[in-house]
Image (tube, rainbow, N blue to C red; front, top):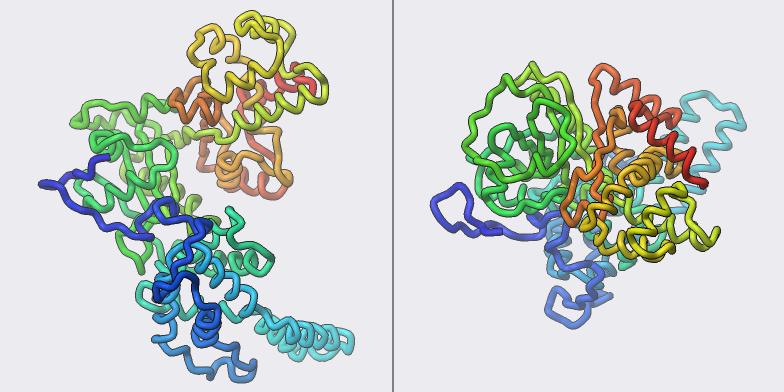
Length: 501
């Protein structure tokens, strides 16, 4: 996309690891680069150990924990410089592995103070003694590297660095460049620390308009993970009339988008993304009398290091309040959400059905006969190929015959397929946790190549009834009950009647 924004001419934009959307512009941790901080072919193991020994503050004895001097600021800055000089790749993965393995919890002290807690309970000592024993145990359960992270978080630019470091951890765990229980534990500890530092009290809600700085508009464009921005005209439309775009920034990192939410202001609940992201004259004047509905059609995390940190839920709630203040006539709040993973799930289901039953039982006999007549083949292999290469959307007959069976299969995928009792689909799980209702599945709602490949072109509305979100969320989280509309439940019932699983 051209880097010309609402400014007078070409303007180079700042780049770097922080600006890269979800870590995609950084070289992968798994790429295997071996460049050391001094330009050596491999990072010096001895130098790495020496740096960690200097940088990671020792856990002071419990009795002196309040009197221990803070680590020297230069030590933290040295660690940051060293880490970044490693670049991406195996040396950085090696440093993270050593940090997690060699500077974690002292298991001997944990065992010792666990025994003292049990002893205090068995001897039925006074409550104060038991509580103090528990407090000592809690203190020694802190890994040593936590002190380093706390220190870095207080440095200027330290919070940015920690998000960058956790982005490397997340990517490294996903690619197996770093692995093992120690690294997974450190990833969880850092995620919990970032969750505290990025809680709502430290977050600022900012609206994006065409008058926003070029750098912000570019980052919003780059970070759009759901419906890619095609060009600057497209970007102008998405922040123009009948549209709203908001993001959270952090008080320590002002103006930097962390998570972005796009909203369409409409007169009804949208059933097609093409009607929202299509190019229309950007100078159209907004008529507030036509606006009764807010459609959340895209939410994107810009930093991989903030995965798992609760930002999306708070952003939606804040935006709802902002819209209610600006446009009190809005009565309906809904999403138009993608269904990632549906096509992959369906292809896998076709494969398993073929292997186990030697014939497909996801369709009724009449549906399968019609599909076979159109494709000229009565095996599921042809159907799987059509789904994998998106060829079926070119046939009006196949689009028509797939409509009903795919709708009921999708309803089951969203409503019936579970992971630990909760919705398997991550987008569904997110909105159901927030207290929404699975409202409507829409056929051919996203006819882009990405939409066809991911979900056979279907999208789903999750509707937020503001007065019921708290009770719906509690029911889903507590009893794993999914609140769904009659349309969705009817499709689920049709699936159960027609598909022999």
